[in-house]
Length: 409
Ligand code: SF4
Image (cartoon, rainbow, N blue to C red; front, side, top):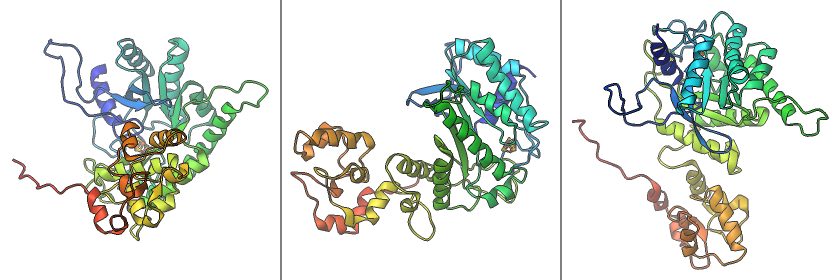
């Protein structure tokens, strides 16, 4: 099998991992000899965000899509009828270097199906990173998927070369993981996450006498599949909060389950609405940067986030007694809970109000969107009417307008 075909198969197989998300674009290529470059799918280049917020393009591939395991939600499971391919270590190294030299990518995201054993597979994954760093002096970004059952020494070595390591927790609940991925062991996953955390803490210990060894400076992350089991958004967010707290993860990624060919009857027939994934990311953001606890974001017996409005607005509408908030004197924590106020907007308000009395026109000057916030705040020239804040119509202002569906032709 030639390298191009392998790349097609192994980049396509990697696209289900949400830990770095590709952005969609129009399809173009230059196979007719005209022009330069291509946006054709299956070539494995995706975009991700570095810890400093820069957008970086990564070669995102699997070492192999053959796998001994039979996780029902995975297109690469052993019982799946898909074409299989396997890169050699040198092929991935060469592709990475070639793409890097041509300025296509700034780094590598490498994962793999499990072949022979966890240790054998992890050794292959680590070999790619080792060769890139030691033989080619590659300074680009490397994200390695870690196999939880692999030997501790291999994981330590992975951290020596990788910027980020990740282990997928896969399901929000242990019972679902047992049912859908019987070979996976949630205790091994958590144990390895715990070990990663210790090594990450050691590497950052500035009080140590000797300089600690380098270990995955961009930290660890994980991914949870949404909608493959019956877990509610509340359960998902509780699991995330626990993961952030216990293992100090940098990110939890949410990946909406997508039905796969010849899938098991244990899986739902349809994918969850994509907006559910989006709302979970917003809720996750609220926990990490806005001081919300997982338990206060989701309301109601069903434990689901509303799909039509964002979770912060939904929270504010449930807690109208806390508004209107006088933004001339409110604390940072209170300001962060105002719908439409982002962290930067709050910083600008805090800096500006030291010198001036804030008015409605100042919000525009500070590039703060007003429409969402005005019903919830008091300024020197603005106070929302109690009728507006307490009325049932307030929520209607924010609901997207219904659109007549087309007939599809
Ligand atoms: S171990 Fe990974 S690659 Fe293999 S079937 Fe499970 S999820 Fe897929």
